[in-house]
Length: 77
Length: 170
Image (cartoon, rainbow over all chains, first blue to last red; front, side, top):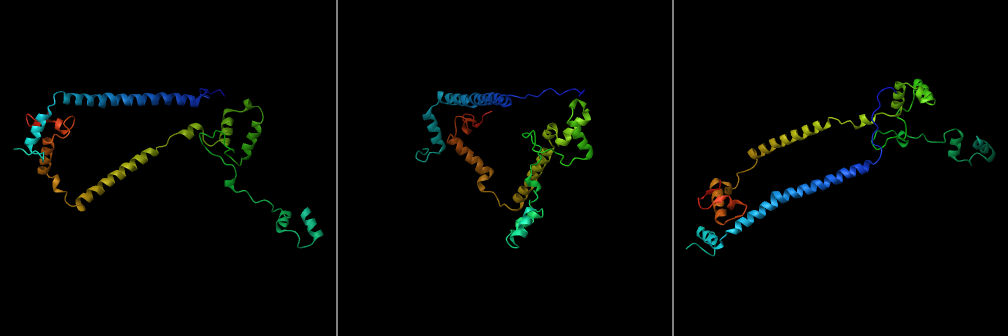
């Protein structure tokens, strides 16, 4: 056949190649997803809570809620 | 043949019907098409059980004879003809995608839109009034009560309200 021959396709190791690709991909995707969640959600949330409770005065908060009249057993007086 | 000989020797009623049928050449039931091995174009079946073309024309039979000799004597067109006799589609043709997905996406979007029409009709003609608790006054009184109670003060609604200036945080 004088026409140009197609390049010989890969004949062996097809499953191995697919497995390597997918195992690596699965590892990277799951690691990436968990890293994204940790630094996008978990850490900011922990910081928000730490900030909130750093200067929190529960007594003052209680007085404010009492004055607003939302506590049934502690009416504003 | 032998059965008919035995027939005359042994007597008229002692030979079974199937033996008589067999003697006259009606022995085997014709095999239905679906019971025979078939040709299939599948990626995981590279060599199907039978060739694609079952009944060869005279030309094709001559080509098959030529195939029995040295293959370098065959021209490129003859080789392609032999391939097409044996196989229906090439792997490339088999794996080629269709435009079916466009039809499917179009159909899905169309019916989603139609569902939208149905929902609008229902809201207008079928459903009654919504509860009074959705009115502007009720919702603002409700929100004020939530802020007074300090609902979700860390990351939620009370965290968005500025209690000193009595307004939403910028």
